[in-house]
Length: 214
Image (tube, rainbow, N blue to C red; front, top):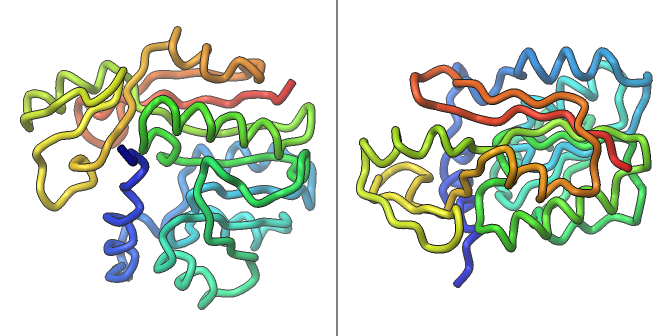
């Protein structure tokens, strides 16, 4: 069964994006990370959405490629200009080996089962130069009880859940993990920074991670 289906939800969201949407504002954590990178570095924004990070990075002198499986988001990026856009899936990246200095993927790669996630991480490792960094987020299993309290849910495969939550992307598979699972998945990387914290809502636990490609 196909599990990386959440892009269908987000494509609808990007087609109707509002001017004051939070998805247009870059995360402070991404800005801080970027300040430590070499000027002009080539960066892949994997799961770029409507380009909140890709466009900010490009405006600060980085060579940015924005990739997403939802074409409506890429259309918004193309309207702004200045960033190469690529329509593709996260577990089959259409790039040469070691073709990026760094990869960013904010709230993206956990949209699928463990097999999809493992392939996606392998692809990130393949396209990143040794010593390059990966900044990303993953869903923490601390979040799972909060989701279960809100919606009926079903574990469709190991650590992968769907919820009866119409109108949200939670009807699509999401992968939740503990630190041990996370480190096993990122076996081709060295940890630089790892933190499990809530986002803007109580119970919205995410792993925030910076990894160095070995």
